[in-house]
Length: 126
Image (cartoon, helix red, strand yellow):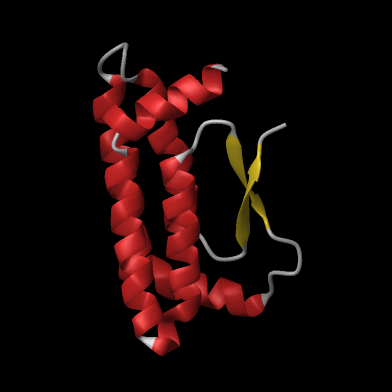
């Protein structure tokens, strides 16, 4: 029940809807540019994860090979570093208030996903 409440508050006040729309728009652009479809899939995964982050975790995907590692390097150079940095800045700003601490922690959970998204999957936390 607490996960549902935190996710609902995150969706409305924590920026979850804005993040999901942003990642969704990036995914759409990547799908239109045929070559970048793997990045679109990663952006879509980030959109879903940023929409409802509490009670979920990011784990390595079995079978992810060298191609996903090389694509992640390209992702980091083009988008990953500034996405991760924006989540860090937002997390620090939210942690300055007691009410914002859970939302800051949710932003910190999104940092590895934004920095290195390919070869990982989002699962429900045990």
